[in-house]
Amino acid sequence: MMINKRLIGTVKESKKYIAGNVAFQFASLIANIFLMWALTDFMASLFNNSFNQQNLIRTVIISIAALIIEAVCSYGSSKMSWLSGKSVKITLRQKIYEKLLKLGSSYNEKLRTSEVVQVAVEGIDQLESYFGSYLPQFFYAMIAPFTLFIVMSFINFPSAIVLLVCVPLIPVSIAAVQTWAKKLLSKYWDQYTGLGDTFLENLQGLTTLKIYKADEERHRMMNTEAEKFRKITMRVLTMQLNSISIMDLVAYGGAALGIIMAVSQFSKGRVELAGCLLIIFLSADYFIPMRMLGSFFHIAMNGMAASDKIFRLIDMPVPEEKPETIGEDCSAKIEGLSFSYDGSREILNNINMSFPKGSFTAIVGMSGCGKSTLAGLLMGKNKNYTGTITVGGIELSKINEASLAENFTYISHQSYLFKGTVRQNLLMGAPAAGDEELINVLKRVNLWDFLESENGLDSLLSERGANLSGGQRQRLALARAILHHSPVYIFDEATSNIDADSENEIMAEIYKIAKEKTVIMISHRLLNAVSADNIYVMESGRLAEEGKHADLLQHDGVYKKLWDKQRELEEYVEG
Image (cartoon, rainbow, N blue to C red; front, side, top):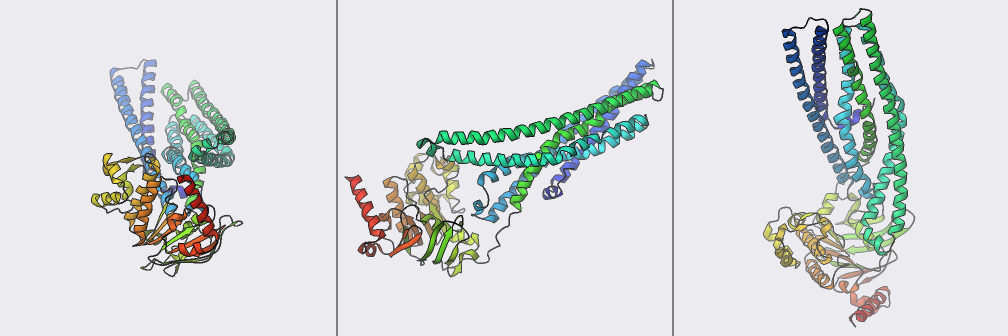
């Protein structure tokens, strides 16, 4: 009942902690039996006027020893629960992380990020209770009633057998609601992850929603989703309350029946007073383990629902290990490339491009023409394209992702900066770099003077580098990219949404990189592409033109029209 062999086998280390937890609980039960025996024997001696000092001393010694043992066992049981929960968290989160690494940078084509986060955090927290509380209680609840039955059999067999027969009624009631509960909790988790996805999206786009005054509409949508979640939560709570009420009725009814049997047997002279009192005191212990198991059952069911999602993630097919690695030739070539995100609307259509080693190539065009999609394909983020993309003559789909990441560096206008220090963020580009090299690259992007006035390399960054200006964030991202020392750099609108001074400094650095490396620059601003060796002009997902800046201006094509419009706008702004 509720024993998932695969889950337990996945977290093998937890087995010894579960066994230890059960052992401590069993030792506590034995100590409690001796305590109850000592107390009932003492009470019977008082009633029968057979009390003496020796009887008192024995009762006190046994009571103190039993209480100490129970305290030690309670601490030990809690420690085992914590250790098993710890092993579950470490093991499963590591497996999820490793799975995401194997799925690669395109994992979000198959999974929602919010679902991964919720399963890896809340879901595994539920499993912590499953391993730390439910499983130990399950095995202890199997042992305790039989142990008490053996003890009580020597006192009064009819009472012992009646109590033992009543015990299975609790797991029967648990099993009765298990199928219904499993389906309900599966719906609960689906609704929970859906609500989390909506919340995360609204939170990330809150500024945009406020600007366009769309926050009220999104608020109503969130309320609708929250109301659905509230209703299914109340259904879960109702189910739990009903099943707990049934288990309480069985447990307390069984204990009451045990008491009635003990008194009945005593009145008939079939059991002594001490034995009668001991049966009464231990009747509750017959049902408490099973009753506790029933309490943990709902936590376990929640954990089972979460584990289904965890294993669904872990069982996702991993792309075959790509055998090829990029050699010295990092020239890239695109032939007959077409791509669609949903299989219906084409984003790219029959694209042919070439990026020779050591060249500076610009890809330009209006927003929405497919430039960034093309960059994602080159970096292996987007899959399922038709046509060919080759690097050094090797098809991209056959190139190992680690080799691609080692040789291609991607810098967008939203390059992610992690919470921590400037040094920690820079070392991602070159883990072995010393402070002098880090400072030199910060000087190179004209950021060191500012950071030196702060706390140097130990200057703290908030999440996404929000405590820096847009230009400073981009310069820091560029510094990290320079430290990577890859043969190919892809700049995807790297100068968007920043001030003019920062744009000029970043472009000057891109031009320097282009003299030593292969640079592919995607930009909507044509002025940045003037010095490129070759310019590809895209329009509505197609390649409209290609050539050098001067040559393209000679034709009255897409490039010239864009150039004239931008120059006219810039002159208007300057005027």
